[in-house]
Figure 1: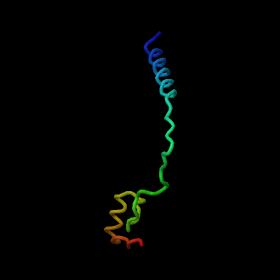
Figure 2: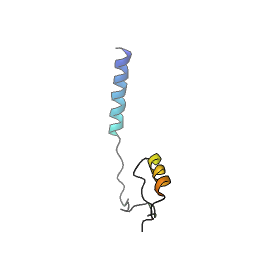
Figure 3: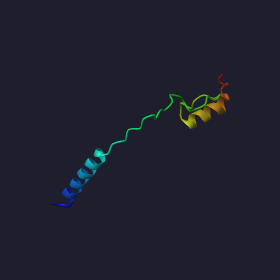
Figure 4: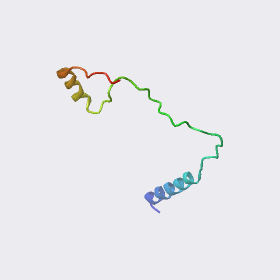
Length: 66
């Protein structure tokens, strides 16, 4: 066997061991369906920061969202 074949065999064995492990049953574990991010009176940055800076320099800051 070459070193490459040994590495492939070791990788297959490692992946098989990882695949065998399972997460235990966790009764009573509940996660809320809520958004953690607070609403802020600013728009989301949906363009590149450089372009946004240029637009602020040219037109000023946009009005706040309510």
